[in-house]
Length: 159
Image (tube, rainbow, N blue to C red; front, side, top):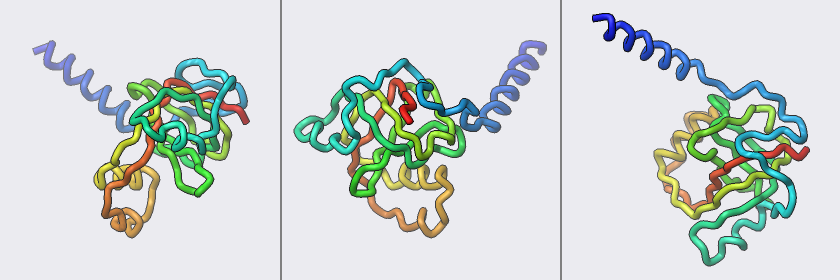
């Protein structure tokens, strides 16, 4: 009987932590790193990703770009701006770290893997809900999207 109570308490504590999850409160000042250590040396502009991946399905990259958005729930994803005003979604390797909302508008360098993928309608709607889009914007998502997605090992705040 005692073992059952211990498991119940552990389950409730875990649930409470998950429910109250939010982005970290870490300052996003230049030089701050999230995840693995990253340097700015030899980073390519995120705008060059389509050219880097022209005939490849996936490639290891080090890119720099401006952060447009961060998941307001936990900081578990961010988007980088492309010149044509589209975005690249960045997730974090093995869900191993999160980034603060303060990164919005900052320039970062990230190291990781870029992949060409097709994002399902359900996943696109999930991200739109996370980003607190309106019901109309969410309902307007009707087609899957072919895109490049980054999985970052580490993120360095540059400016």
